[in-house]
Image (cartoon, rainbow, N blue to C red; front, side):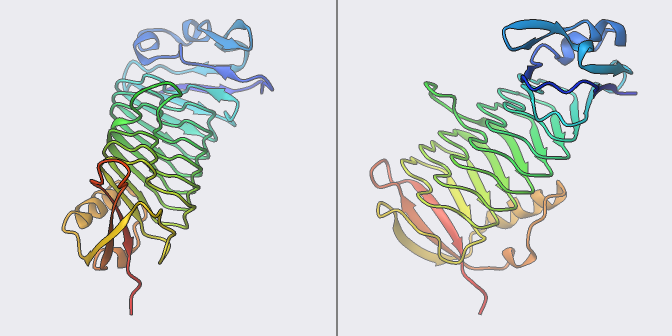
Length: 275
């Protein structure tokens, strides 16, 4: 049986639950977990003041957050192993700096999901906010490993300064995806905003939902071809339950190289519409 944390008393002030870590709670009883101190504004409170705690993570290393946790920050922060399931929405910094395990969110998440993520997998069935897989302000690298799969929409600055890993978005995205990107892969299957890849050095950005997305003038058209690596990504995504349009498998793609203000070794791929 999983450790279940069900929200009983909603808080207008965000709750920061980064102290609810698997290594801490895996050997504790429900009563002990309920006494875990979390941050609410400028004071610490016990987890049990807001959540009903039941079950145990000892057998399956799983924690279930239940209810509208849109005001609950840092769920799965620095997560290393095991699994988290959020049966509802989640707040900011979901899975930030996680290095292993899996997080599944059945609703929406706020900003900074997977920020500076190092490994593991985050699956979001709903929408995500801004700065998915991004670097924190003043940092050097964003996401350096792992996967973030978003079936809905996402906001601006997806993959800001990411170094490695995969981000896939089934719906629309905002502006400047892959800004400052060092390496890694971002794949978008919906409508897109503007200025993608600004300052990118290497890596791949796939914009597959818009026939002719607006390109920065510092990107140059290279060729039209059929990349051999894309079907491998698409097959992997489908195995993870991610919705990939079937016509993406056999399509032709335009390749643009940039950002020429940097190394020019990055690429943006766009799908050629079927005749």
